Length: 250
Image: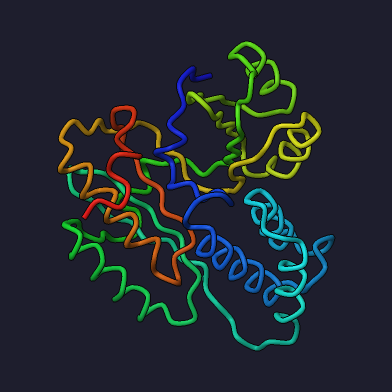
């Protein structure tokens, strides 16, 4: 198990108190609607919907919002594809973006433009995917819990890896254990920052140039602003404090 967490680098986390709250809820609603259209409105018989509900709950999306979203999706004929786009940001940073789209040609063109305008380039399928693992990713607030206590909890809930930040902890598990691990963590009383099945980098690239780091974060933000994009994952590492300092840098 790793003793240090790259949770801030796995994806730009969007907690409910974040300025991106509305965008986060919109993305969760999109995932809920897509899941209902594919498998129906009953989460007991639609695993994809259960995953979407748990992800929305982790970012504190109101229950009535979720219920309204699910009801609206019932009977809708609109179908969306689940897509994954791969590419590079400045500094050789690998990026993976997951998306829901009813027009893959439009989405591909839009994301290619964003990559190029941001100083990166969109690659072909598989171009960076080998640099990541598909995992259940659960990010919680540490509170007063120390490393030993969190390690014990990690083993107790059935997760396979623990990565620590100063105020948060990321637990990683095989995707099929997502629901079980999340339920066990909820019983422990920890507050979630996010919970999803996504991509974790196998190794990271250290960014030591602040200008390059700012370009990477800008590109990730621009990708995340696209309405079709669900999540963006990257394999960068940067010095403590740079995220906050460079947030919103132009």
